[in-house]
Image (cartoon, rainbow, N blue to C red):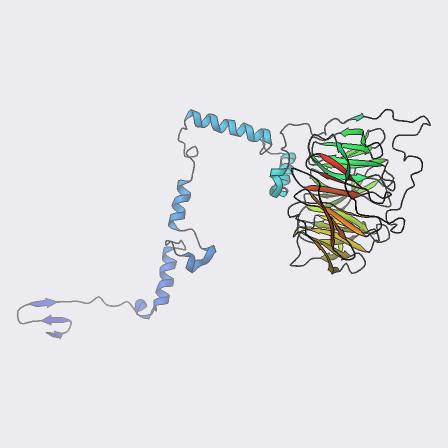
Length: 484
């Protein structure tokens, strides 16, 4: 075949072939440039299923994803009439959600925005909290109290909360007052709560009365000598998370999952004040230098200080990243405050200054829901959720004492209280199986183990400040036990 001037000839046939001339732009473009031009022409939409390899997780939606998104539009939005049974079921679910406070049918308003923000803050533990009913009266439930003793005053006119004759008070941090010993057995059981008991506290200095916080929403004060309930305080619609006596025991404050704190008069059972910031209070402590001020660790990651006279929040401490679990006052009887949280940090604060002066954080740290001050005021004993009890120095450095580590119990997932003997020699704690453990603080050796409670953990423990080998435990079986 001969090719002349773009014409091809043959002996038998003659065929004229004209080639399409190349445009000058196509001759100059490389393969990469042509791909870029094609991408600009077709737009940034992704058409292939494996474009994640090219674009990563930030790639545009694929054609399949766009199709699924289109098909996910409910029929009610496209104008299709739904079956009456489906409409009735949707109406029932909407009414149920309205009653549970999941959304406000009328919508709008500042209060609705506050409730939405509350749910946002509490989303990780919303299954633990009581529902809010729309239109519910925002005031707390009407309190009531019942006295169970024979009479509220004795023949000398003394109140029933006055310590018995001959009982002398002991300072909280006096480690040389008397020697203590590990209890041998359970000698008494206090029953009366309709549900579990979460926290117990002894009367300051003398320990002749025992205060308990029940999951049935009631608080009770028990006589240790008579081993019976003296007064019941009912003022919450949900479980009581924490209770705390003030410095002389004449008042105590209760913190409940119904988002209310109540200040009670121990003797008469009257409510002296009701406080709330729409958050769930987890822990409450009185300021050591002022009975009119108490601090509360809340579910919105803040610590707030209340003035009990005015009911106003006087200070906020906002540096934690998760709900606050414990508050302790250290150094010079309460000039500094140590707090721990679910964010696995321990923060040290100067009183009334909203910025922490020290962070205690480590990649190997676990959350420490309970921290107890050693009677010598030199150490902080911490319940770590990796089934260990750790000890930190309570001075300027707050350093971890790596050699002091108590193990053998199982507390993962439970805020089991730590009790330390008044002389500082023994440490005891419950665990998730209802057992009670005792360790030697100096040698960190386990000394004794008892089966204390059934149907759940041994959650609370306190050591008597006066009697040498007396301590109390409580559990979710609703029983408070006295050990000697």
